[in-house]
Amino acid sequence: MATAVSPSQVQEVLFKELEPMVNDTSAISREATFEDLDVDSLDLVELSQVIEDEFGILLEGEDVKDLKTVGEAIDLVVARAS
Image (cartoon, rainbow, N blue to C red; front, side, top):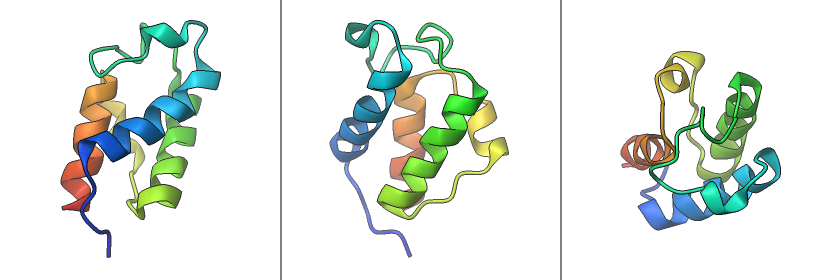
């Protein structure tokens, strides 16, 4: 079972994982959209795997397909971990 995690813990992991995926790392923020960051569906699959490995939370394709911003992804992970 997943243990509770803080938004800052999830943010730290996701920001770190997004860095090699984007051209401008200064654009990574909670408000940044995956589209603006040029993060595609394959990148989101990679992020889902990292989330599962780091936090023990399984995210399905249906879970991530509607995510628009980095903040939404962080909030989803925190909610699932609760």
